[in-house]
Every structure is written in C-alpha cells, then in structure tokens.
Image (cartoon, rainbow, N blue to C red):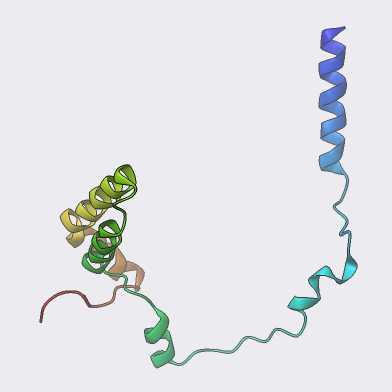
Length: 110
C-alpha cells in the first residue's frame, strides 16, 4: 500500500512537469514589448565596465567589511575574501586579461 501511494504521488508530480505552463494574465509580459537594443560606444562600455581588477575588488571588500561591525562573522568572511583577492591578484588579473575584461587599478596609488 505504501509503495502504491509513493508511486501515485510520483506519477502525479511527473504529470505536472509534462503540462505546459500557462500565464495567468496574458498582459503580464507587456512591459517587454517595444524594447530596443543599441550598440554602445567604446567610451560608454568603458564607463560601465566596472572595476575588474583584483586589487580594486579587494579594496571594495575591505571598505564593505568596515561597515559590517554588527555582523562579525560576515565581516570576517568579507575580510578573508578580500585577503584572497589580494594574495592571488596576479593570477586573477591574468584571467581577467585573458577574458578581455581587465581594467587598470583604480584604487592603487599612482
């Protein structure tokens, strides 16, 4: 009897995955209509590309950790992650260069 109940439950749940999903409100996706994409210029891409440099990431994590006094475990984990980025900066930055997303260090002294 127990095996039959488990089998029945498995069959019913399997049927749920076989039935196509139907939107409850057909107008729910109207916000996506009329969206246009355009290419960004090189200057625009550089302005929004972020700080993909291990030393910048480490600096940002250290700054964030300073604000986490109310959460000592999270603060310690954030500092540990910042130390990882600092220790492995050369390897991480080499990967960023290989991927073409490396940016010069913004937080480093000139």
